Each structure stands twice: as structure tokens, then as C-alpha cells.
Amino acid sequence: MKYLLPPMHTLRTFEALGRLRHFTRTAEELHLTASAVSHQVRALESFHATRLFVRNRHDVALTPAGERLMVAVRHALQQLSVASESIRVQDATRLSVTAPPSLVSRWLMPRLGVFLQQHPTVDFRLRATSAVVDLAAEEIDLGIRFGGGRWPGMRSEKLFDEEIFPVASPAYLARMKVRRWADLRRCLLLRDDFHPWEDWLKEIGATTAGHAFGSVFNDSALSLQAAEAGHGVVLARSLLAADAIKAGTLVRVGKMAVHSRGSYYLVTPSGRPDVAAVEMFREWLRETAGH
Image 1 (cartoon, one colour):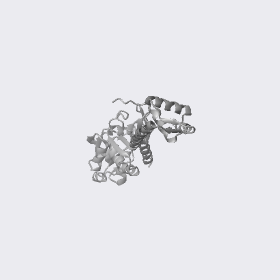
Image 2 (cartoon, one colour; image 1 turned 180 degrees about the vertical axis):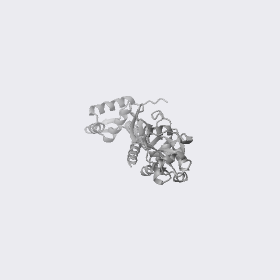
Image 3 (cartoon, helix red, strand yellow; image 1 turned 45 degrees about the vertical axis):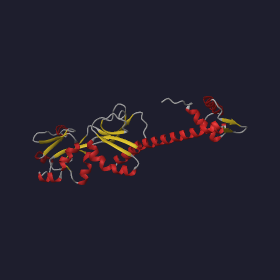
């Protein structure tokens, strides 16, 4: 639909002048000159082919035509203001996040309730995925990614480093009579796609000779669950295993550890201004990561 309307900026000036009834005060409110206000009013009167104001010696007054237009303009501006505020508030409190499934299940979910309790108005939306999602194209506010910290079109901030070390359930270690490092050869070494045992043993100066290898999992959280269930020993990522070790459902085997090939980063699209909810979540992540 095509609308026959005057320039929108003249309507804002018209409303202010009708309310203040003075060119100078209107100019001050709108940060214009008095002559600019007068010019816009004349343009609006020309558009309507009628006078909208009566110019008195010290002020102005609306004509009957001006009164009718003022009712419509104020209603329209009020509706626009309400709609704009609603959109602004909604955008400020909506928060969409992506993160790897293993991090979501083993670290984020046990802690997320604190953030949601602190910010009950945030419309939080979480996508657990191992894929590198195009945050800008899919209108996602931020992501937590594992890697080297550089992704095209993204700003990144390091959250966590990781170490890799063997863990198992206390019951499994007791059953296999594991008391020292050499006893690990009696154990079944569970595998996942993140950090192969062959690489880890090589990094600590050991070999795979004499070791028995078991099931392969494509997700670190699954391999940790298998270890908790007593199926064998798995290479754990320190961040993902921290809660289980603290709870006693998993135990470190020995003191050997190697540094992970990457770190966890908070990423946001470059050039996109952060809304309030993004800032709140970023601050919460920083604080939580520091504990």
C-alpha cells in the first residue's frame, strides 16, 4: 500500500511546536535552529495546503486543521514509540547461544540455573551442536567454541584451557586392582574421537604396547559416562570431568597429564553491537570460568 504522507521529520517538529507553542523552545528540544523549525512547519502547511498554526506575537496556536492533525500525529507517534520500545526490550533480553554438546551436558547445564535465576527476564535459547555455526547468518548472539581462537568474522575471548588425563570409576579401579601406573595395562582403555590414546601415550613418552583398547565414542561426554558406569578407563578433558572428580564418581589414574590442543572461546560476530543479554551472559561466563 502506498501512503501519501509528508516528510516524517516534519511531523515530529509539528508535534513539538503544538505542545510547546514556541519556536525557540521547540528548536531547543529538537536541537534545531528556530529558522529550521519555521521552515519545516511551512513545508508541512504547504503539503496540506492549509495553515496549521496561528502565529501570535509571543507564541503560536493550532488552527482547527492543526488540531485535527495533532490528534492523528500524537496517536501515530505513541504507537511507534510503544512498538519500538517493545522491540528494543525484546532484543535486549533475548539470548541465543551455541556450544558443543559435551560442554553443555558436563559443564554448562549444571551451572546455567544460576544465570537464569539472576536474570529471569532473559529469553534464553541454547543450541547444542559440534558444528561451526554461522552466527551472523543464523542470528545467534554468541557461541562457545573449542579451537585455536581464530574464526573469520568473529571476535573471540578465551574462557578455559584444558588438560587431558586418564580417569575411571573408583569401583572399576578397585575391581582391576589398579594401584600404580603400570597396572593400567590390565585395564580396558575406552576411546573417543577427541584425543586418541596413541597420541596421549606418545606425548608422555609411553607406547601402546600391552594395552587393550575398547569402545570408541564420538563425544567426550559419552566416554565419560561410560567410565562412570565402570566400563573402563578414558582420557578425560579436565573441564568436562571436574564435577565428576569432585563428586567422586570418577578418579584420576596417576598424575600424568598433557595440555589440550585447543581452548574454549566465547565468540560473537564482528561488527554486531552487543545487546544487554549478551553482556550479562559474557560477564557471568567470565565470573564462572574464574572459579
